[in-house]
Image 1: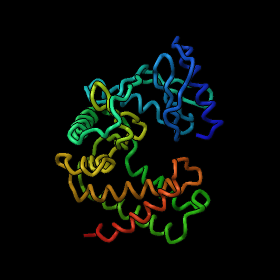
Image 2 (image 1 turned 30 degrees about the vertical axis):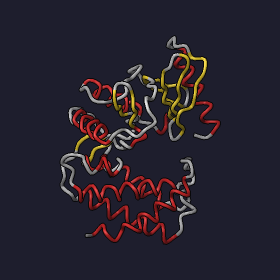
Image 3 (image 1 turned 90 degrees about the vertical axis):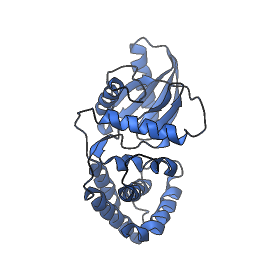
Image 4 (image 1 turned 120 degrees about the vertical axis):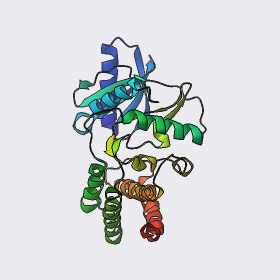
Length: 276
């Protein structure tokens, strides 16, 4: 969010917290992207705030409640409600003090993701298909006004890669289920209760390999039952998608343009082996 939006979003979260009787004297920004993540103090509650026009807060809350009921490794809700203040929606979650800055061990990561997928298979909720997110990336690449700095050869290459990898994954014939959508290390907390997944606004349906493709190599390579050819294709698809987002004129990812250039190069270096 831009500075002005972040200020409004923070005020919305503080207002909600105070109306619920929480002690909110300060709000510390933990993460700022399409949504704002705040630590409300001294009550130590985590607030997620998103623009009302671009949010899936109810799905995120419903998924988190279902996973908690299934005993899955998921951060707990502080409140089951989705609150609205002006142009923003606010959800409240338990704040977990990190227990280590070291990467979560491979076996723990794999085990947590397995349990998460098992819980997600028990939840019957309408959710977008993973191809909806691919379509959004394809529209972005095709829109010269939204990606003005993307050179013509790079645009053509990225559009072709998105289309080719989308076909490869959808034609795989693998079973599909509800997924986290982005279970990368940034969405897995190391807590005293063990690894816990957060941020379910990206939930979608698709093969589990699409989820596994977001994890580090040492985790993905040990996920039981994964189709490794499909996993390779999903990795290429995910890389093409996040590369497209880095060229959005409104992208606020730190050092995003440099990453966009770097990831385009990485995609080109692996493109030759994807047909083998």
